[in-house]
Amino acid sequence: GQSLEQPSEVTAVEGAIVQINCTYQTSGFYGLSWYQQHDGGAPTFLSYNGLDGLEETGRFSSFLSRSDSYGYLLLQELQMKDSASYFCAAPSSGTYKYIFGTGTRLKVLA
Amino acid sequence: GAGVSQTPSNKVTEKGKYVELRCDPISGHTALYWYRQSLGQGPEFLIYFQGTGAADDSGLPNDRFFAVRPEGSVSTLKIQRTERGDSAVYLCASSLNQLGEQFFGPGTRLTVL
Image 1 (cartoon, rainbow over the protein chains, first blue to last red):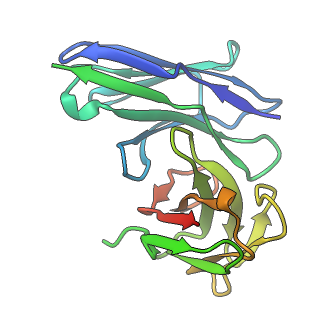
Image 2 (cartoon, rainbow over the protein chains, first blue to last red):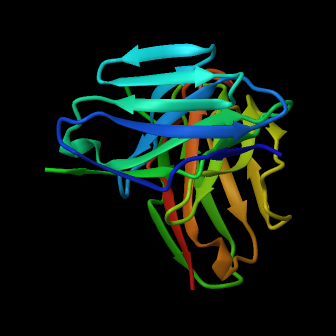
């Protein structure tokens, strides 16, 4: 089977930088996506890594290392509105099943 | 343009009843997913449509759950003989292709009493 593990909670202050890790176990791999979800809201797409390395999108960056079965989401210049849950996600090898990680709840403090 | 819409936004039903949840994807998106999300957890895959056909229904919990997408656009998730354990937020997402960015609807909160 496939699983994606994340820390359950991360706390940081406004203006800081925070890294949310995602480790995965899968027999095959088609890339890693990241989604943000505010309480009561729907997940929204943040970033996708199809290849190893860093992808940058404004204040958010995402990194993937296939050899280490590991990726992370980097949030810079944290703002209060970044307080939300963050999920890594990937399609399961050989199927169309899309797997979401366990989720990380980010709390940004003033 | 319009995003993904889902109706109803809330559904309260009694144990044993039948419910239908509707999803209107973004026009032109051929890929459509249904997920179920419980409080504090990530979305759990239920079924994937490519066009009109269910390409992968391996996430449906049992045969009480069924989904259709007859014209390759609107999809309906059908739950028979609902149980209290079916209570969750049911999310629909559409995408241009299976590996692309998924656009989620606001979800339907189902409560089974």
